[in-house]
Every structure is written in C-alpha cells, then in structure tokens.
Image 1 (tube, helix red, strand yellow):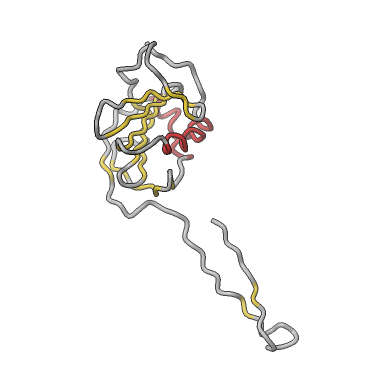
Image 2 (spheres, one colour):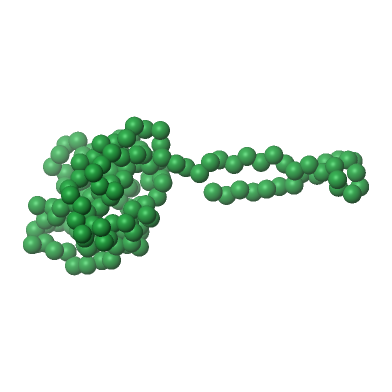
Length: 167
C-alpha cells in the first residue's frame, strides 16, 4: 500500500505557519479476503512432505491473483487457498497425478513444469510436477493460464526444483 501525505498550506492564516492545516488524506485499505462464502475443498491427507514444504508456499501466496481477491476455504488441510469467483483453487501437497507418465506432455510456464488435465469439461487442473510436493491449481474451463503464470515465481521462490518423477 502506498500512502502519500501532503501538507497543504493555508492562505494568510499567520506568518509563523501556525494556521497551516494538514490535508485529509484517505487511503484504501489493504486488500483482504473477498466477501465470498467459504469454498469447500476436498484435499488428500496431509503428509510429512507437505508439512515440510507447503508452509513456505502458503505464506508467500498473493492476496490477489490475476485480478481476483483471495477468498476463505473450508478444508481439512491448511494447504488450500482460493481466489475469486469462479474460484481459482490451489492445493499444496496433493497426490502424484495418476496420468503422469514418462511420455506425458508437460507445459513449462515461468520455469515450473505443469501437467495439464483437461478431461473435465468444466475445469482445467494444472499440477506442478517438478517440486518436492505436487501443487495443484484448478481453474474453470474458460480461464486462461494467467493464474499459473502469476504463481510460477512464487512456486520457484518457495519450492526447490527437482527432476520430474514420471514413474
């Protein structure tokens, strides 16, 4: 948040400046979680690997993603986070994707290798597969790659790259 204070000088209120007034400057509050209802999120059980790696990622996630404010989630894991409506959902520490094979096509966005699952006509599931834990980002089918593009640097800064375990 940027707050600029300006002193506004009055006219002839006094040569010593005692009549000078300070401008009334209002700022916008820092963005918080949107006034959206909590999003129920089903998650896998938390693993020791998730407990070791996910807190750094979760602590670095932005309050806004691709122009959408964050929103509360209802989950059995502290490693789920969401933004906007339709929601963009991130879950850290998911299971290895069953479809991940040595021949699986991966898309690299901002130095993160993603396995993209478009089998559900209503949503696209992006899974980061080159980190110590799998990170899944689910978006509606009409959402472009802007959320995963924005999350790439955050993932790079908090989770070390490792070779893809394609089975």
